[in-house]
Image 1 (tube, helix red, strand yellow):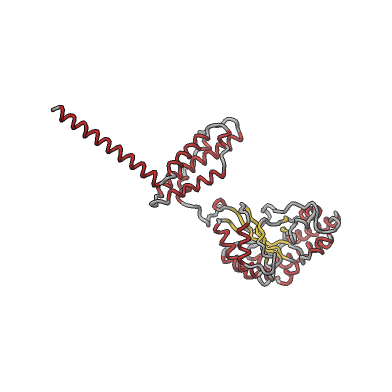
Image 2 (cartoon, helix red, strand yellow):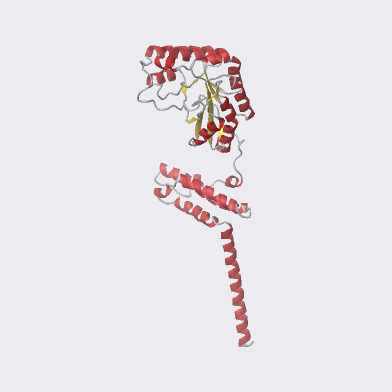
Length: 376
């Protein structure tokens, strides 16, 4: 074969190799442009796994950054419906993040630990976490972003019935802090509250601040009278108490101690719907006020079901929709629920003496007797 023929074949071969390399580079570039976050996320996931074997300082990984990076995986399904690529990268990231979290916990317990620790191996079912979001109807509370407790004060009234209807339609349980005088006026509604699985709490007999907070003896009377009315009406002795107007500025340590020693869990709230700030408040304003509240893992929402709160009824469907959109679980307050109270104010709004030991003892003994009667 001539030198010219050999040279020609050499150049053809080189040209073919160059074409293959160019095609490969173009394909890689196309993949990177298709899912721009893909390569970054894989690198980051790899970095997390490597960091888990290093010093404790590397293990102090920001939880907020984890959340932001997890959200970044959503980019991967935007172009051309490439769910397979999202799943693949998601598995890498979730597996590495799980391992890092486990190792971080181990590092707090012991100075020596191994990144190959058996307890820190990624879960085999991690694939399910990237392919589907948890079902909202799941029995596991881990499928929810948080818990919300809808609480209604000052009833029952004619408006309690439509509120119960709305809650039943959505299969939601709530908590009603009732007044003794209203329970006596609307016994069938108090009975319905209990029958339909909601919690019922003591909110004093008549809600009149001067009687409650200027005269400790009258406060004790109202707590006892309301408990007896609830028991006589529903067969239930309340174990929940909410102070009219809240504890802040109204309770001092003597009030709080007496109520707790009488067997009550005291509950304020951390979300005020604003439905009682004005008689002219609208449903839209109530909804807006709730949406302004700082989102927390546990949200106890103050609402009212007395006869002047028709706008609360109108707002309730949107309130339910809002918390469902946040994937919150609706719960009634129970004996197992951790109480929520405001810090006691350095000075109260009322000129009164402390609730003394004799008054506290009377409240405690009356409640113990009532509970004993209910359990017999």
